[in-house]
Image 1 (spheres, rainbow, N blue to C red):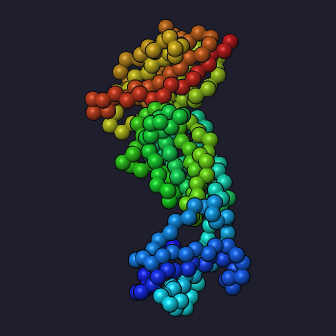
Image 2 (image 1 turned 45 degrees about the vertical axis):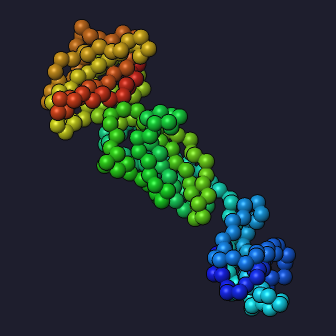
Length: 267
């Protein structure tokens, strides 16, 4: 609270009440003479609610001013609800490097804050909104995501700045892989792999791993430049079990790797 100093003042009396008629007892604060004053009170001094306040100046010889005009302040320490994520779904593959994220409205929230990280502990951020985002937020062009694995989460912010806890996080994969979809189960031991064309692509390579912990993966194909599909030849047919596949695209001499995608072969 701030007010202008009054000349020749010895002290000021500040009244804070819960009602506009100032009949309830809440706070009476006395301050010695000074220039412009500003006081800060901890929230526990004032429970949540609406308050009225006014100030009077006292001079030498018990002379005093009239009360100032009455002003109002509100204390609100209640956090808004934690938002629930809407789209993209968990483990969703997205082709665009500037995906749009969306949530359901959270009770008590006015704004939202989005975070995108390269790890589920959110120690390495790839993109982040300000505190004024709405129910949808698109990763800006200057923060376009490379192909790979990401995690995203959101928190709510109310009109006075109270924040919710972070939402659960979801996994998001930026990739130009198309088929087989992640988690596909098939009996076909020589499946066809499909992908979306990447602007400026000079070459594509298909990589298959049979054990992500022990096997870094083998490049199955030679140059796939200009293609958007490749059928596994008989000499490379897959055995029954789990396999993982990814693509490598070369653009302007630089290689970019997609995330691994799971493919299961059954009998």
